[in-house]
Image 1: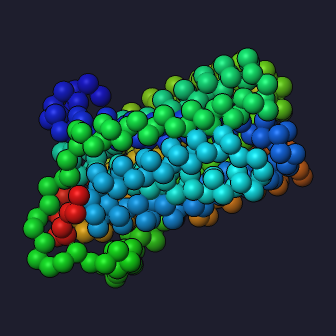
Image 2: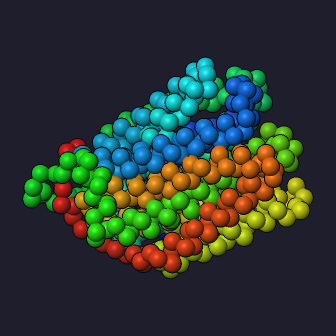
Image 3: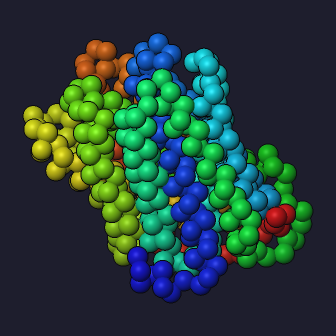
Length: 415
């Protein structure tokens, strides 16, 4: 990371840290929910399926948020859209701390999902357009590693809060921390600039025309296959991580601190996997990188869940599990950005990355539902392995885009 980062301009570095911070704080807010699932089940008297539905709602609305957020960036500018999306997910998470009913929590998780999906689309495209082509994979892989940082902070906060506070209060404390990301807006406003854009030859298209632009004939194939890629990537990740803390505590009977240790191994591995994926992506290509990590994910998930492992063996295997599960999402921003022309790049990236959430939103619910019939471990393993197989299928149909130099956008920026 140090080599490419040292070659970056001040603007490239500021953009990197804004994108890194936004995605890391997204992860903090989202992963706090996964860690709070046992407390939410007890507080609201809901089933695992109901808890899974909360996660599905976030993913489902995140799909629309990503599509709309990308279009907002195309229409009004990446930086302005990024500020709006950060504020949306931060305020929604904070408000969740004061939810008094399950219905209220569902509504707030939906709003959080909109901001969550939109933030990634805006930040990823901004970074992709600012960074030079030869470093795009490495830079965006490093940005994706921020998820591990936010996830790790969430685990530490969860262990601390649930050790010293009753569970019926602890989950509210966790969600209240969600207001912190709003402070990032100040940095974004002060330090970032819009990517260079050509003067428009005509007025920018209406917002809804921008949304529909990714279904034009010249980019329709990229949209459909990219959407399939997103389904597999998000479905596997959601199936694995939403109920993993619950699996470690209720099936493996680990304490909060014990399960946090297992998660720490996976999180460190996730960070490393993102960085390595970015390096491989720039050296071997986007397709080879995604195929390698998807195949490895299928194998490691099945072994982790179905093999008769001791607690110590699970701890060791947690590293390759986290490492390989990181490689696919770390490759998506560069790949999707390179599939589209500038005028619909934000819309296309937001749709492909987040369309997968519409279908993958069913995976946490299915894990919760199937766990009542076949057990939580098998439910996680089957769902995740199927999802990662879809990534392999999509890779076979995608073009190689490594090293693509972006053209100037043909739309105006209104930032």
